[in-house]
Amino acid sequence: QQPSTPVPTDARKQTTLGKYCTAMEAYLMWRAKPKEVVILDVRSPEEYVFVGHPEMALNIPVQFFSPAFDAEKKSYGMAANPDFVAQVAKKLDKNATIIAMCRSGQRSAAAVNLLAAAGYTNVWSMVDSFEGDAVTDPENLYNGKRMKNGWKNYGLPWTYALNPAQVFVK
Ligand SMILES: O=S(=O)([O-])[S-]
Image 1 (spheres, rainbow, N blue to C red):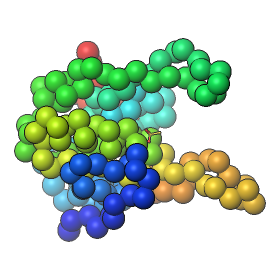
Image 2: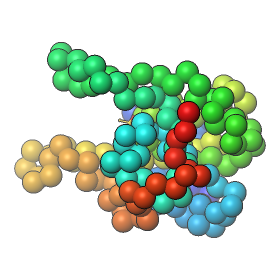
Image 3: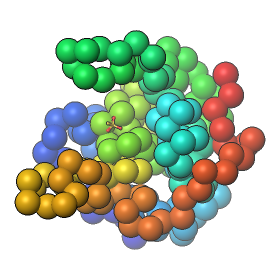
Image 4: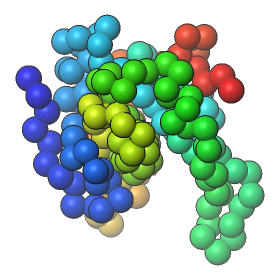
């Protein structure tokens, strides 16, 4: 069964290919065809290692974590991985079924767009991704926490274990 997730309202989560799925739909797609469907985790290797990752996920970062802290934005930076498409191409054909995922669906959309521009046609963006969206309700104990949806919150299979065939190696 094909995912029926609609176009996300957040423009940063939209892709040129228009293929969207939730973490649950992604898991069901993978489970139906585990040899054909690739879950591609485009987060930084640090997130893959320390936050954990779907058990079957291949890590190729679309952006790297940057240790430069921006006091105004109150965040660390991310730097584009200039070799992202080439690194994907080493492992996956242009007609492969790929589900891109990140923390909560923005970098996965960016990754889909890069791959689409390079000729990949069957690339989905996991809109809630690994950690999901944050609760936005000041009355809620979990306000601001990523507890709404996503792979981890659904209780889908994830791990901290590192498989040499799946980790990012430059
Ligand atoms: O890019 S992100 O959705 O993982 S914050």
